[in-house]
Image 1 (tube, helix red, strand yellow):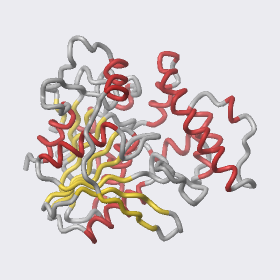
Image 2: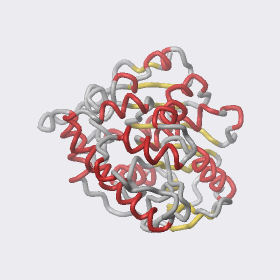
Image 3: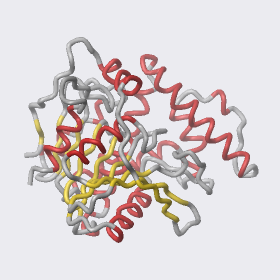
Image 4: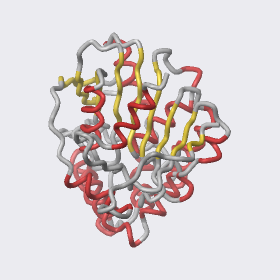
Length: 321
């Protein structure tokens, strides 16, 4: 049974509630930069993915995938990378299409189920890094990508993939969208939509005949945005079709690689459909842990040399072999 009923995480008493546990790490955590090598991975469709490597010819490599409207400089990515490097891992982080300092070249961007891009990053790592074992770590949307990738074609996964950890994953995209549309989450929704509208306006300049900006400023929810832009741009019928086909929860029973999903019970981004207890209870490989606290990609810890609980817990799982 892979349902973990007792989590070791406890939020600091002076940082109560899922909102503070989400916002404090996002805005106030400071993480020293690590030495990285930048690389641009050119794709067969004419687009590119930007990578950053921290390399020391380690036999262990971790590939980190960020969340919605983030990038490889985001705090939780840098914190996890630093923790892995301290333990002797090499680390590869990547920007989803359109999430770096330079816009991607095509009309299409990234989305919650674009596992073909994660596959290209993994394949590139396998071809260019000597690691004997490769681990995957994903956060939020990047966690959904990671779980979907592991479960959609498990028989085709590379032999050198070892373990995976995902945090704060909207594994039921429709459920998460409804949750984020609640008035109590307006601060997050508005922040995401400001960035997403800006990308659509930038795309309009490059692809004027393929995008209509009418009503863009009136969009207030993910349902409206995904219905109008994400779904048609990426070949889905509408938002409901996009969510149904790309939610990772349906792929969890097929996962054969040791995998840990950690979603806090007080995560303001996640509704009840994002807590796959039944799938974990029936699996020998997929593990689910739900701390009572932690927020969304939060899990702050103090007095541990700057390392957050999520980083300590990920390393614990990745080395449990």
